[in-house]
Length: 325
Image (spheres, rainbow, N blue to C red):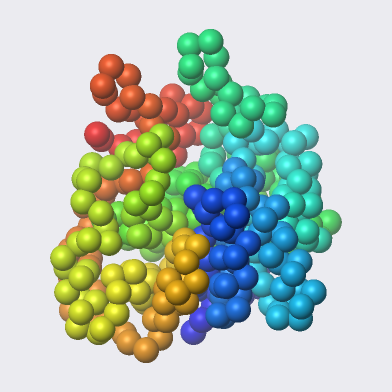
């Protein structure tokens, strides 16, 4: 099994290339290297700021005949400043134009919280506080459904929503969410949420599955500074199979039926991250990894005031989670 069947009827590959934090000048090479070694899933977003370069790479591999458009599954996401129904389609069209595509395979609402409309992607008041708008995500969702009707999107889904919010969408939607993208790694395994999704035929995509060691300071919500990739248990499991810790993590996600989108711009690592079909984790090894779960969230919008960290968006309408520091 190399794909998961979505409730929309389309198939999404279980392993793809993540593009968050991929710097300008590196993304194009990374995307082409990934496609050349067999990747067929690309995870993108408006806020990543590199969709134009991804689009250049796609245009080249299509024109070169390396792959056809139908063979590539592209994910993108609607940013927080574009939740107003009037802004949904224009923002989607911007991503389509940058990616040089006529349709996006899976389009996600990036966060359930909405920021003030406008060109400022992180709007703030004169005190440096984020400016929010109280826009119900179902109003946003209904516009996405219309975009599916018009052929601009094949499947729609969510990102960073909690189980209650997901159920709310399921209860009120016309077109069912096909996927939920959330933070999943050995220190934050999200078993209940993953099971919740899979029971409802909502695919789960794991971001920051290696712990995102290069994550920006504004996202550092870690309760532990120990890097995921340096965990001794994961190293031991990798040594038994003659593989890297990264490969162990991707294989662990694969065996859970969770889509992995590891980010790299190094062609050798991009290829290695996908080479997880020559070994399998035993039940005991899966249990070993399960024991590493600390419920530690590494990615969250964070501010620091007087030396104390707190969630930046905790007071925002529809903010999805709360964490302890």
